[in-house]
Amino acid sequence: MSQLPLVASAISSIIESPVKTYDECIANGLKIDPSQILDLDTIYKRSLTRINEEVLEFVPPENMTTRDSSEQIQIFVIPLESHVVESQSMFVDPSITVLEFKKAICAKFEYNIETIRLIFRCQQLDDRKTLASYEIQKGRTIQVLSRVIGGSGFYVIKSDLLDPSYDYDFTYLKDNGTTFLRGKELYKRPYGWMRIALNVRKYGNNNTWLGHVGNSPHEWPVSYHGTKKEFAESIANEGYLVSKGKRFLFGKGIYSSPDIGIAERYAGEFDHNNVKYLVIFQNRVNPAGFQRHLNDKYWVTPKDEDIRPYGLCFKRIGLIQCSTN
View 1 (cartoon, one colour):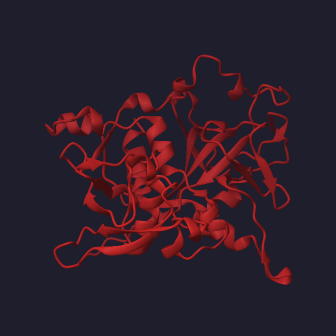
View 2 (cartoon, rainbow, N blue to C red):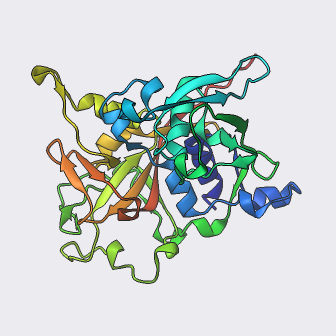
């Protein structure tokens, strides 16, 4: 039986947007625009939670757009509810990216970042560019609009997203003390979880990074990444050293853990066919591209390309109680 419907439910929960399978759309006669189809890269980047400098420094939401107030300028934002709310003033550093500015807007107005787009001078702003690149200066106005994909409001995943030949069910397996290594690091297998393998063809034909020899210098170690939105804030809070009266800054980047038990604290939760599940990404991490923190409890990967997903781990946590009334 295809695991794609389960994966669709998980991804829908992670990115907070409806996700359907390709076969479901065809069966229901739904028109699919190419822009609606999700690939592995898009899913993963939208799923990643990371700690940026703003979180590490515990900057209040209203000031998240910059670290240096001397370079701030005042601009105005017309929110989604513009029919009832006038434009709002915000102070920003023009050197920040559009994505960073979106995060500040979402913190201020409590929006879901996946559902908004920003417009300036009738042009939609690219997340990767800076405000300065659009010549956004003091006193300018930016409009927030809803983001509708292909006019449909849902995403689509196809069967080629998965690689069933590498699925592995650890649900009923227990740790018997056997040691496993990947990339010269201890591999803590996801006991109690079911792994659905992702198609990693996008990374090319050289799969030595995905090896299982254990002591090969070409292999990448295994880590786990929870998708809960509070992930970054939870870890940042854990890094607060009360005894010394200061915050222990781990560094900016993508946080994961070599221990699935730790990652489970930040696992996303979703429902599928009246069953509740947790979901976590299983990754390989470039050994040359991460830093260790809190006695190897957390790994921080500054660059996206140095952490690669190769599986989604699922755990059943209960049934949904249906009312008989």
